[in-house]
Length: 168
Image (tube, rainbow, N blue to C red; front, top):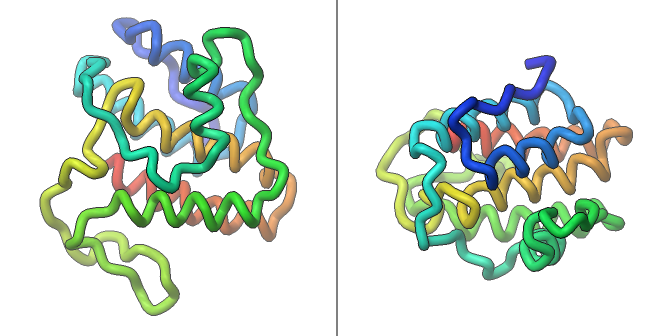
């Protein structure tokens, strides 16, 4: 996917703002595919803003800073990831904690994709401004830090691909 998805005409303001922010820098086809999958999910959920939210336990501090700054609505720039390798470890710890029990990791330590399916539980199945937007934002912050470093970008793309699989 060479370009980010367009904003759906019936999108709520929170979504339109977030999509605009997450496309300030084109991070490439893998991230654009994740944005497209997230857009389809939020569209299917009618851009609702339910009260439930993703767990903040273990979440990268940059995501918390972004949320505390009203998700960019107050004009603050997106948080900068200064230590991408450290961020990667924190990010995977948070992502791992959100996975349902039926998902299994392969011998290389990455989540298996397409090998087994089950019900998505309350840990991850959250849409709206307090849901999977935090995951998308976390990938954007990380991607901005590594997009010009092929060895680091490859590790980030693995995370983006796993998130895309979950969103699909």
